[in-house]
Length: 105
Image (cartoon, rainbow, N blue to C red; front, side):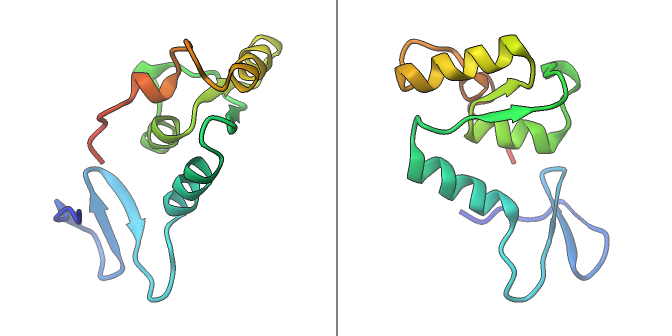
């Protein structure tokens, strides 16, 4: 489903729900490839983020990625959580994907 842009800043840059997408002929957005990775690997992919995750100040890019791929902090505890997620295939674990589910973008 294609959403109508709410703001246009230039002929090649369109903001869809506050998220910029650079529209260039023949180019695919990065979020497309992130979705492809998530669809291909199902519950066998995680994103380790070098910045601490705080939902109240997370930028849109991080929110979008974490709504598709489970995101964990790049700390000892975050790596342990990511490994637990991968070991169990994500069963019985509440992740960023669940937190940001239904995010309008």
